[in-house]
Length: 55
Length: 304
Image 1 (cartoon, rainbow over the protein chains, first blue to last red):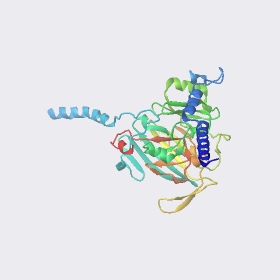
Image 2: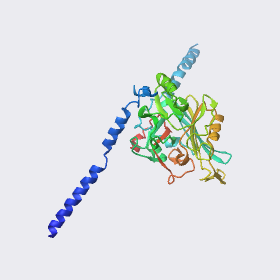
Image 3: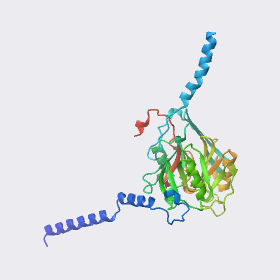
């Protein structure tokens, strides 16, 4: 295998790894979404004595 | 006769001028807006004074515990403020850094609200979490800067309070130390070693817009050496929560509440750590309580 092909393969491998890490790490937007979802989720059940917090 | 009329006129107008002098625009009730930058010329080693805020700092020994005390009077409820280290749940920082970022005249740690999943967390009118902890007492500050303490986060009491007042800040640490002028018994099973000798942090309201902050240095397992004003050195071993409660009660607090102590206990005055812990040994936390000047001295731009 020529050096050129080796370099190309290594570059491709590095690019794939970089993309993989970027996708694996959750972005702040996702966390914010989760936070908002949690806030708007409402009480656990109708008898929750703190249900008024969600009115 | 003319002189008398002039004197009477002046006497009538004087209160108007006086009132004009003490009226300040409120600071925004917004978690992301800091207070105004205080005028450095108004600081001494132990005081800060301008027409909107008066702070007097003291250090006293209670047995073998070194108490750092701040007595605060403000002109407007908006000067009682809280701040986060960054976006809720995403960042912690040193109390001294958060205080500096928000132009605090004096600051202490809050309840480290992001350290656990529970709690009804409200800061500067913004709600971040709606999960009251029934085993904890709740401290609420309202639109007038008044404190309300709800034992065991009682739902009915909370609802009644919400019907009458705007909740500006809600803390979920405790226990309650003084409620309506009554010294409280400290529950033995309350979290975070109430009966041990630990570093402590507490806040109390003495009267309208008048507060006391206390941070107690050291602990039984982590005594710290304090250098007194006369140069002598002494070890501080922290105190029980009951000792902090008694101190705040003796100072005339009508409401008083225990905040996150232990390694979080810290008091900042100006831009310096007033309690003994150094900046290097500070724990990073999520939130602080602070007081700021309501006067724009034209220095805000210098901090941006």
